[in-house]
Image (cartoon, rainbow, N blue to C red):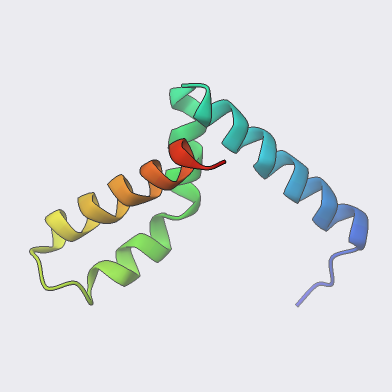
Length: 72
């Protein structure tokens, strides 16, 4: 595994913060970027929710959007 330097991590963090900020302001492309970033985790977690797979994925996405939009 390649080690990331402190500057690289800070840059990634800053880029993610900017993406979240834009998503909170209503930028649909930024929200899609965040959902795509968490797509693997959403798919994985949907296996453990006692709902049909599509409903579980939709619920997780809705909750993530809610967290982003209501974040202080």
